[in-house]
Length: 117
Image 1 (cartoon, rainbow, N blue to C red):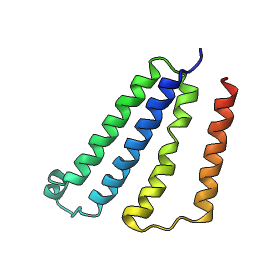
Image 2: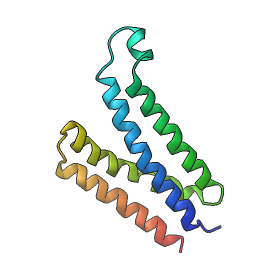
Image 3: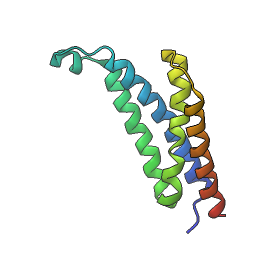
Image 4: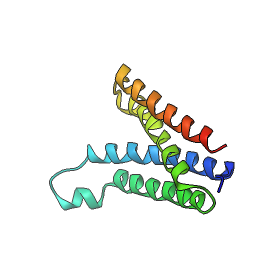
């Protein structure tokens, strides 16, 4: 079974959307207090969860016709986007080790992708 390009693109779209889910979960977590009310009324957390659900929807669509062993690693591109958004929205540093980790992830995905063609 080969994984069609459409499935790969759906996973990449889901990874992109999911990376924003992580941003909103982080943002919402900074607004939490020790009471249940702050959890229930926290729109940032709700949006983060919603974005992860939308991301999962695209992943599920992709899995209908693609190989899980190819698609799941591609979802790791969400880490790259999350690193960018962490810098943009929270001012987090992008270190050499973080970039090195992303290079390893990208290399692994490339090897998997080339092995399927």
